Image (cartoon, one colour):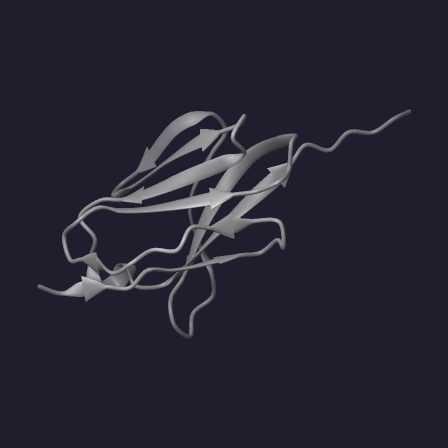
Amino acid sequence: IRQIQLCENSTNAGDSITPLSDVVHGDKALLTCNHDITNFNSMYWYVQHVNKEPEYIIHGVNEVDSKGRFSMDVDRKGRSTNLSISDTQTEDSAVYYCAVQPTVTATL
């Protein structure tokens, strides 16, 4: 049995990603990101492997979206998003980031 360590991080002081324990190779991993932005367009997830630049994984506007082994849901009222990684692999060991695209309003 191989274990995969998924690390979490955030780019905004108001954001937080719940800590994860080790994930067993082949199992499902779940990361939850909470933020304090009330009006936002969409949520994004990125992954950064050791000595590499961050890479875009997936984004969502409402409810559930999926891309390969990755799926996410957006909870607008709860101001959070979950990233689910199915059939975890060794290469999933990395730092994961969530990002919020806020709604921009202007008064004319």
